[in-house]
Image (cartoon, rainbow, N blue to C red; front, top):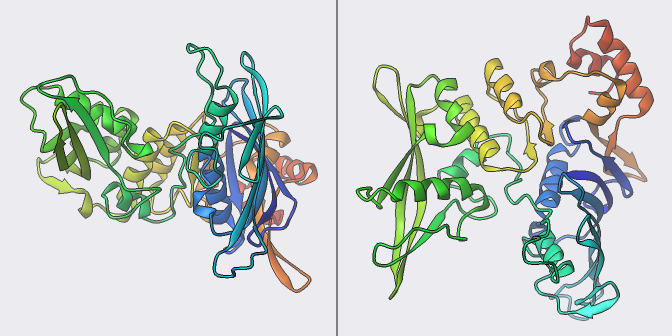
Length: 411
């Protein structure tokens, strides 16, 4: 989980912006252009430990993350341009300081500067520590505790599936293989020849780990066709709730074999084309491409919440969704850290508070301010006074949450 985030340099965000986060749900409030999507993208990158998408822009962050138990990672990282004699080739300077604490593995401090890594002051081989890599937190953990006992794996502090769930249909298109999200949607499965036992491959998109396991379970059936694998929604955990919510009698995920590569002792089966098929109560078939906008968003979000075992990052979550669907989505992610945005007051109807402290922990204000002739995005938590004023009005029980926020000038 992300505990706090300080932004010293990033795009047009006010330098020194610092936000604190709880274990629960957070709702970003503000006008269009206030940077809600920008902040969600940044939070998603921090949770995944993946800053590769920022390789061509300057940034300087500090943040603390925890594995949800007792292990913590405190990071300070900076990626800035330096003066270069060759203007056509930008020179980037990366510096990083990471302090990792674990109850049984102890505390280690790692520094990266001038392409050199030192752990507790001793220079070491870097072993893949690169701020532009897609698995930074994992590499930091492995490097700091490379002398750990074999039966005591380190925390990786990375939720590789914590991408931003978008405000439209990009995530749905990603599932269908029409768009990428940190890579394409795919699963590769290796098995020895002839007739060996299937094993889980490491070649898969982070959000398709559970799908990969489901495909393996199906392929263990001898008569199953490897060219086209069909997985009933009933075997896909909470994602299977989509069938009843969408008003169908049954549904299945179909995976098409894209490539089959054989070597002397094994074969690799790669599935890339995924399709969702539904059956109405009258027995007629419905393809996913014929679903409505809201149905596609509900389907995509339930997949995201099921496939991503980390914190939830969702932009304009309630867009196109029925009131009952919104309630179910929020129930699905109950107990998980979540970062949400919405310009629709429907989301606010499902948020409850038992204290002013809870109010202060929930809302993040995203606004734009002008200083020295330049517009900057200003992000902040509520003040104690703002949270107290809100909670006093909330306890009266007359106004909706959205109405109180507007009356108090917070939305």
